[in-house]
Image (cartoon, rainbow, N blue to C red):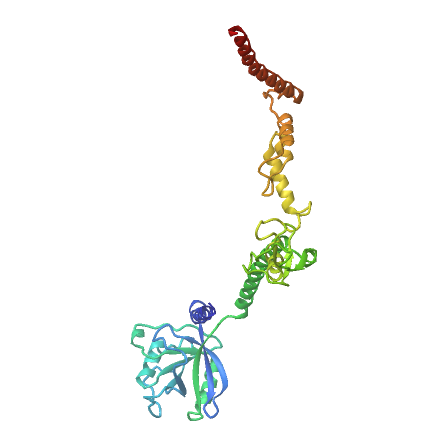
Length: 377
């Protein structure tokens, strides 16, 4: 990801000048020690080839004639086979005295054997150079410099190939005007997303802390050393290892025992419940968030019934309730059209009548048999 970001930034730096009107920066380098002694800006021409910046060096040489509108004098010697080219320094014609177009000046420098044409403006400003009908014949790059920059180049050209020129892209506008807002926006976005991440992490951390057991609460749990003769425990449900004589055990309120080294990390870092029966080690406080939410859910689901609103069910509620509570719930929570149930005294009388009737039916055949026997006798 980091390498991809670096490549994207490099690509952005390469294509940025194409969208914001890039200019060239000319560096004057001393060949004796390779130190940059001067620099100035240049405006590339709107015709001719697009050269890879930094791929060649150029030796400045004042053109003869100086305006470049006629056949020009050739350089002192050829530089073929090297990465160095001759750069013709040509003056731009004053307004009203235009003897030739820009492409004509560059074509004359090209015909004389120069590898680069530098047009010197007559003022301290840079402007684009357009071609006439012969722009497609230009095969060397061309650029325009200011009057002061052209003067410097001619001064360095007098030192017989000691100074050479290199060319690099430059930003014509104040780079800080773009970088500072960009960094500000990126910083604000970074702080915003970082704040969201911290808030989410803190919320999750609080939720985990609610489910975990504190060390002060852990010390309240029973701990003992295992004794094979008296203890009924056999093996630890976490590590599945049999208990050895003298092992340190942690006894939970549900009477499940574990190795102290096994159960303590579970209670402190995972959940404060028994791994086997899922019973909480310590009951929740009445004012906790989970208990209040469970109470609200139970009250909302009860509707108009009194029994469902009074009793909240969870995973610890027994499957079969007591008979007394069921009878009370049935009598108190009955609907409008429910018939009233029998009282306890009515039920006892009905049971006695049933027993008497059954006894009467059982004694009747015996007496009839006795009377039948007497009749036979």
